[in-house]
Amino acid sequence: MRSAVKAFGAQYLPGATEVVVALSGGADSLALTAAAVAQGWVVRALVVDHGLQPDSVEVATAAREQALVLGCHDASILSVTVDGPGGLEAAARDARYAALGHARDGLPVLFAHTLDDQAETVLLGLGRGSGGRSLAGMRPWDDPWGRPLLEVRRTETRSACAELGVTPWEDPHNADSRFVRVRLRHEVLPLLEQVLGGGVAEALARTAASLRDDGDALDEQARAFFPGSESLTISSLRDVAPAVRRRVIRLWLLAGGAQDLNDNQIRAVDALIVRWRGQGGVAVGANLPYQRLVASRSGDALVLSVHDVTT
Image (tube, rainbow, N blue to C red; front, side, top):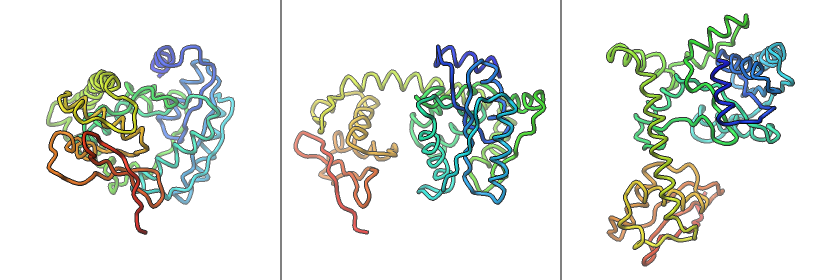
C-alpha cells in the first residue's frame, strides 16, 4: 500500500504536502488513508454521508474517528441528498463528487478505487457498448481526482486493515444483487476467472491502460483538427480517420455545453458528416433546465442550437 501511494505521489503529485482522502470507512479507503499518512502528507479525510441507510450517521462518525486514529490532520463529515437522475448509483456518485469538489479547498482528492474496481468498470463498459473511452476505465490522475490504488487488489487492502488492527465497515450495498456492479463482482468475474484460468481482473486492468494510451494519442490528433469555433466545417472532416473525427466531434460538443455524452450520440452526429441522407438534428445532453442542445447540418457546417423542451 505504501509503495503504491509513494509511486503515485512521485508521478502525479511531486512536491505535494497536503491531500484529501475520500473516506467511506471501508477497507479500501481506510488502507489508503493509512498509506497517505505514512507518505508524510498532511491528510484531511472527508467522509460523505449519503443518508441511504438508517445507520449512516453512525457509520460516518465511526469513519471520522478512525481517520483521526490513523493520523489524519482533520476529518469532516459531508451530508448529501441523493436525488439526481440516472438511478441510485449514478445519483450517489454525482452527489459525492459535488460535495468533495466543494469541500476540498483546492487540494487533490484521493479515491481508493482498486484494480478490482477497474476490472468491473471495464466489464460494465464492454457490456453496454460504451466505446473505447469507457473501456479505458478510470484514470490514475484526472485533476483534481487521484486513484493511487488502481494496481492494488482488494485483498491487499483488507490485509492492510488487518495488519493495522482496524475494522472496516462492510457496506450492505456491496452485497445487494440489485446492483449490476455487485453481480459482476460476485458472479461474473469469478466465473470468468474459473473459465479462463485466472488473471482476468489483471488482464482487464491492462486492457484499460492500453486503451487509455491509444485514446490519449488519438485525442492529441483530434485537438489539432478542432478549430475551437462554434461550428465544424464538414468538408474538412469528411476524410479524417473515423476515430479522430469522432473525437473532434466530442470536443466540439463539449465546448458547446453538451454533457454526459455517449457513443451513440457521437456516432449519430458523425453520421451527419459521412452518411448524410437529409436526416434531422441529433439531441445531446446539456445542463440546461427545460432546454436541450441539438447538433444539425447547415450547408457545409455542423451547428449547435438550443431547443426549448415542453414540460
